[in-house]
Length: 501
Image 1 (cartoon, one colour):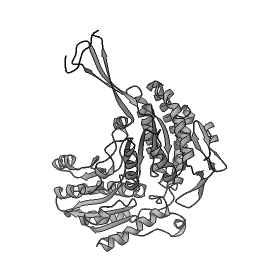
Image 2 (cartoon, one colour):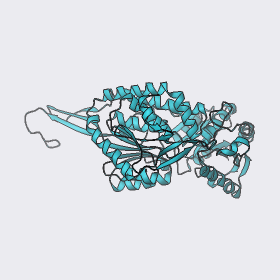
Image 3 (spheres, helix red, strand yellow):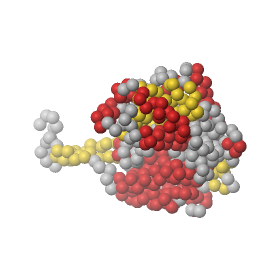
Image 4 (cartoon, one colour):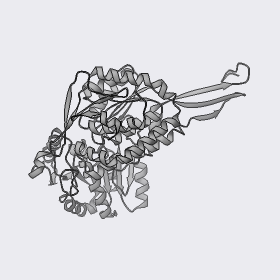
């Protein structure tokens, strides 16, 4: 075990990381964290409050000048070490993540791999962080722009990707020269803590990255409202995102929001149905449907609807529920009991509006499953676009099947939602592909693939209610985490007046 890891906990009690030190909440309060597959206690974590937020922000503020003046390539060297250490600890962290969040182990490894990939990607940006040089309109005068960090950044992250999303946010913020206070989701603090251990062991200077565990009310909003926090990067629900946005706007703070999705796969009559079924099952039931990019609507052309529905029933009914660490498991638990009940509440909504439950539609509680938060993979047939199950984000293993007649109708149904994150089309028609690429109004579009699987070198985010226009990952992330400074150098030896002389 690393030196940082050995200080991060004692007897199953874990600590915050503030100013380079592992420390309990100031008032000593803790919250329990349990395995969603069997209820086993994972540990006790700080239930922090305003005083802990103040300490973490103060540490980040003190560390800012030293970090921003550290040459960006040197900042990148630390991220390279983070990537190497994450690769060394990938299996350990992935198993921890599965126990804490529930996703099957192969997906948990992918979660950690995103952190590895982002570390190497952003480390490389330390030798780029390109500015711009432009010609001046006046003689003997230089004009160029450079990127500068913003200051202290609050990163507030969700439970469904408890290593990947904190990696996306913190690594982009850090390579740009910002300092960070990270607040992980209350359901998954240990995964974020494991990530911070890696940063500590990689040599991140004290105060540059801080971890404060606790609730949204007691840690998240105090971070948003703290006068020394310059920017907020938030991923979570639309309701909370709206609250964050309003609070940040009232203080003229920069904020990026990554919120909900109601993503769809379109399957045309000419599609490769075997390929489509693979993509649909992976997109709808991977991570137990708990991805912001998960497919929750299947928009299928009339000629293949019955055939595709039959194929899906055969596949979905055979998906095996269980603990994510078991090799036989296809679908793990949902994150907690309240989310399971929320998912189940939509079954009455669906049938009340005329949809049919083709399979699933109930909690799974037999045998060992009774101890966990399991919900059966569910197919809903006879869904129409105006139904609530076709419009509202359920965030669970539920797929609604919507029949359409034409490509134009399919695209219209896809776009008729308040969200706009990810969409997909399966077709062999080259012309249909071009039309879909042009007209699908989402931030991510897949051709002959599912709605999940974004790569870190391209910008990630959506349109409409999915966010507020900023992007994560890729170079788009650096746009959010940097300010532009325009610099003019006049070596003419006389006063020159732009737009006048």
